[in-house]
Every structure is written in structure tokens, then in C-alpha cells.
Amino acid sequence: MTSMLWSPAKSLVTMVTVMLLCVVVGELMQSEDGLYRKRMRLARRASRHQATDSSRNFRGKMQQFMFNDRPVFDMIRTGNARSIHTNVDLLTADEPVSNPVTFRTTAAYLTTTLRLYGTFTIYFQLKTTQPDGLLLFSGAGDDKDFLALELVDGKLKYVFNMGSGPRIVKANLRRNINDNKWHQVALVRHTLETHMLRVDDTVAYDNLPEGSSVHFDTAPVFYIGGVSKKMYKMLPEKVKSREGFQGCLGSLDIDGDSRNILEHHRSDIPDEYKEDVLSGCEAVFVYNNNDDDDDDDDDDDDDDDDDDNNNNNNYHMMNSYSKTH
Image 1: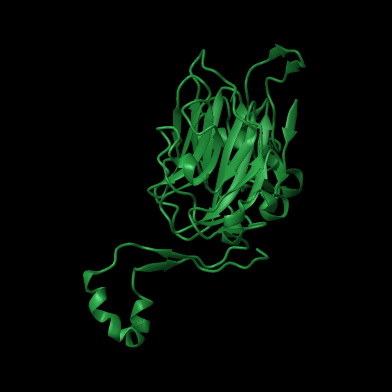
Image 2 (image 1 turned 180 degrees about the vertical axis):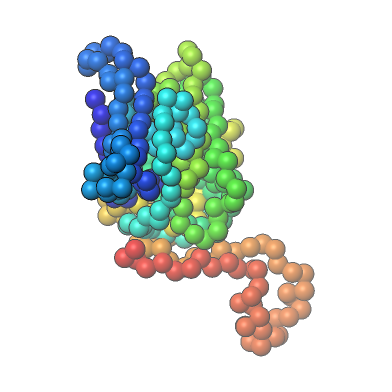
């Protein structure tokens, strides 16, 4: 009937800062599994004389709470919760990064196995200075059924097609995420009719129109960090990326299965890119083509200008990150 899902490296943490939380979800209804409860209390309702007795009320953190297959905390966060009543604050807490890897070039990528036919949850963390790049892709590389997650101008865009035409989900972020900081990302499909993109504490939904196809018909090959060079020319029109992701990616979790990308999928990295996918989040030098015209005239002064070049925008360096974090 109800389930509390706990995951140490998954999505956003909800901090309960007060003693009272009453949640009401849905109506009493018949199903194959029996009757759903009309009302449910999470934590407990405190009476006036109990309000100061902290031993009688829950204090702590909760995350990924599901009720009747609905993500309660996400519904509260987006305002898509007319039947949910609460007086708690939803806060974002930093999550430790597990099994980080570095994609040193935009050509590097790897593959894993994932069937997207029904519901799924894909969670990971990323860190980059690059504004563009393909992060995830599943499909044949044409306008048929596909799933893609890409960085476009510093913001994440989720594009998919299940046979009824392409649909786009964008998180309305105030700031770009190519800021050389870790960000939490989740693609969630708790029901066949709803797709969700979550970036840190920002959530965007797409509810499919009635009569839409609700199943992906894709091969089980799942690309991470980009695709092969020849595939970029065949990507669906709505996918703008023409190169892969360059930066750090960690804490990959697919349907509750935490995956060490290199440990389980090193053999799936094309031979020519094995040296470009490294364990840990290491410094990445990214070339910026905005060279000044006067650079050619200063070749003789290279040794004297080393300190100045460190402040130059010709190269951007992603700060190194410990391999153990």
C-alpha cells in the first residue's frame, strides 16, 4: 500500500524541520491489489499538549517517499499536490559523490544495458564547465523511439519519443549548471503517463496526452557521455548535441542499482577512448577557441607570460576532485 524508499546516493533529501506533518493523497478506490487508503499520515499529528514533546514526533530526514506510486515530496515541491497538506520545509542537502569518472574529451563515451520499456529511475551527479554535450542516449539514432538527455547552453534538456512524436522537458533553472560544481540529476518515470526531470531542487513534469504511446521501443544499448561520431549525424532533429559530455559524472544509479561505471563497463568503452575515461574526477583542460589575434605576435615572450596565461581565458580547468569522493 505505502512504501518508504531510502537510498544513500539518490536524489534530494527532505529535511523535516517541524513536528507536524499530515499528508492526504487520493480517494478511496478499488484496484486489483485491494482498497487504497483515502488518508495517510506521515509522522503524526501532534495535539497541543504534545507539541513540545519531541519524543512523540518524528524529527529527521526523509527522501524518495512514494504513496500509491506517486512521488509525494516532488509533488509538494512542484505544487502538483492539491490533496497534500503539509507544514514542513523541503530543503536540499549535498549528497556525497560515489564512483566518479572523468570524460576527458567530447568524443569519449561508454555503453551499458538498460531496457526502457516501462517505468524507470535514472540518477547521477555531474560536474562540468562545458555548456553543451550529450549525456545519455538510447535509440537507433533516428526519429523513431528514443530517449536523450543533453546539456544545451548550460541547461539540461530531456527529449524523448515513444511513437507519438518528440516531447521536450526542461527544468526552469535560474542559473546554468556548467559552473564546475556538482549537481544532482534524475530522470524519473513513476507512471507510464508521466516523465520527470529533476535538477537539484528544481523539478519539471511532462504528462502525456490521452491516447499517447506509453512504451519505448528501443534496443537495450544505453549510451553514457555521448555516442559514436557517425551517430551524431543520425540523431533525431530535436536532439541538438553534436558532441559528447566533457566533465565528471558520478553516483550513477539505475532503478536502485548503484553502478560503478568503470568497474562494470570498462570493456564497453571503445578502444580508442579507453584513455579518455578515467576513474575519479580529475582536472580537465578545455580549449576555448576565443584566441586573441595578437597571440601570434607574442610567441617570443611565452616564457615571460606564463603567469599571465594562467589568468587567460584560452583554457579553463575543472578543479581536481579526489578519486575517493
